[in-house]
Length: 327
Image (cartoon, rainbow, N blue to C red; front, side, top):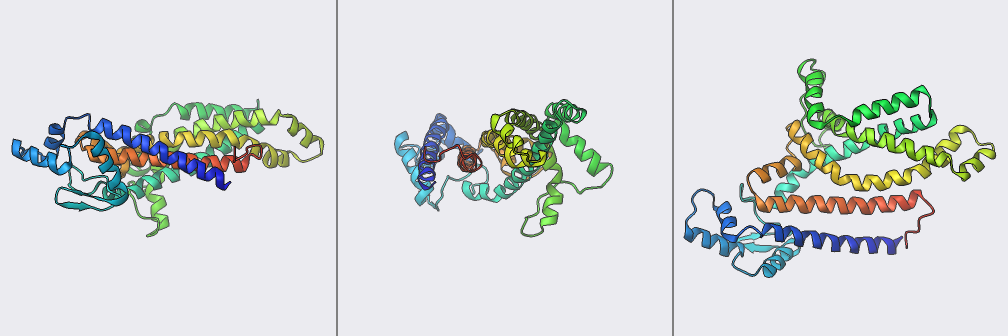
């Protein structure tokens, strides 16, 4: 297991370095004068643009700029007359604040949204799929898959206004979605995010219900399940102790791939519910052409996807004994 983890971590570092290089090159595909003009706002003069280009290091070769940027992430760097402490991803063109600190301030909102939605769509999606597989061909199966088909056709920007109208504006059953730190009040944290969780989890839940049903039906037809049944185990023992574990392998694999989709869904969800998270920050950065902030958000999302896939690989090996983690 240790060798497997070391290899996966080293591979993740290489992947993140490649992503950082590609992102940096895309960033500096914008001419240096235009980048400087974005940074100085409406009071630009040729002399001020030249000064900003020097302070940002835009007068250096691109490879040297990239090494400086990379070194700043680990050791910090000087930007103009200011010292940007590690991890330094630069300063925002809009608010002149460190990119890392700005993203870190927004990160708890997005993490809370993603974690809560993941728990919901796994619990209800997998549960619905297992029920459908257990009642294959019966009315419960048809109802569950019919509901999954309808849910999978919904869109976040359609579902969000409906949930707000039904539970906030017309009934006052719930307060308007907002963020409260989990450590400050777990109850208020959950109440403030329950509608965004439902909205983001709804489409994923439908997909995982269909995926779980398909995986369970396949596993239940395997020879080893027939052997287990022949030993006289009850239906619930066969279903939960043996079949469920085998069916979780493809679900764990797809979950790792869906992290990127979950982050993309978080952008729309945060915007729909006016939550101040990394998703909304990404949208605002694109609108305002805040290039350093855009780079920071891309690197954060890339790191989240890579780390999530490492965790999924470990879980995959734990739930499926046929997988050798040293391979």
